[in-house]
Length: 132
Image 1 (tube, rainbow, N blue to C red):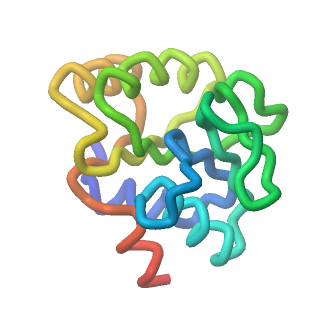
Image 2: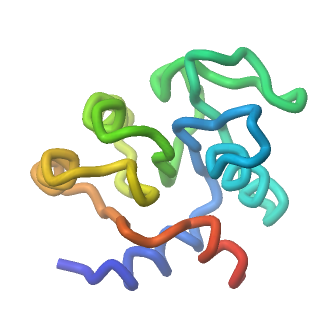
């Protein structure tokens, strides 16, 4: 099994990301991560059923609505949402998931491992993106 650091390095080389939990609130990480990924040249899709668009960008209700091959998912939601989204991730053959602090619990991590997902947790993608 790969270490979290190895998975992190692999993920940050991938170019197509989804941010689950994107928000219009510029003080929240759902917004900051979405913007930082975009500013670093990544293709980024936002998922949040509350919004149709943010800053002129189309926002999707579900990962299943996105018509593109996605490399990675950044989860910026509660564990009870994360556990449900894992099914969409698996259905879309996405292998990499980065759980922001607060987006996971033991049940979420267990389900991710059972589905053989490459995961990062406890670390903040926003901070790691600043290093590249």
